[in-house]
Image (cartoon, rainbow, N blue to C red; front, side, top):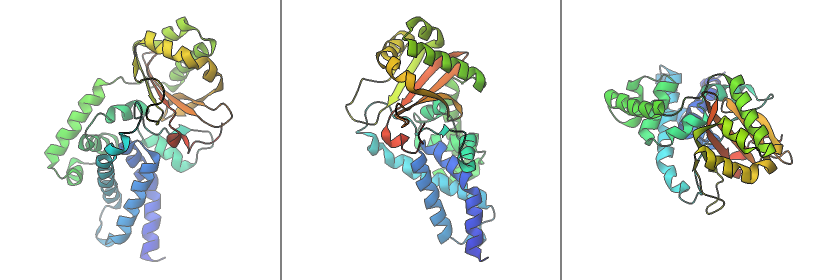
Length: 289
């Protein structure tokens, strides 16, 4: 085996971690794959023999690529209708091992939504340090700042994250609440819907088409129930339970083809946030249901 083959083997072993890092920073599976591929090209062109810590080197290079992508993509969203939501990771029973690693290491939809409010540098510093334990002196080289400045970036991001609702850790309990919501939606039962929603619930949607559909976000239990009852009884009958970014959710697939993915943030036994992703570009990787 020559040096390049050995290097390629080492990179492939680390690819799931790099994919999880990139997805957590970017919130897009396709962009994450592009970032990881670019990382490989840079490794292939470098003098790898001088790299003492290959995993650390690849993680920081992936972070640098993702930071550039974050800074560029603002213009791509100007034509988008409504909210920007991350590309969901939908867990299925037959998910391949690499996919399972990305799910285990990546952050949930609720956290990704919060991260979207941060500056690119804050987002990168928080994800690399708080999620993947990258030291601040390595993050500093990515954001072109001192280690102390990198620490401050992560601290500012952490304060925003800590102010957001923390999902209940019990997946089985989450599932019970989500199933109760879906049952009430199918029945068109306003009272039961109100019982499972937090009074300040937020309903966000990403349909990806400029000027289409109603305005989002919708805030408050009464307003959310009204919006849900406009369409849910028709669509909820086609909802299949799923794990979305590690939390209880559902996939809407009327003819076996997913047309929507919905993630729920369950806090203290009630739904605090509903995230509907119906952007076709973000659903194309999901298999038939």
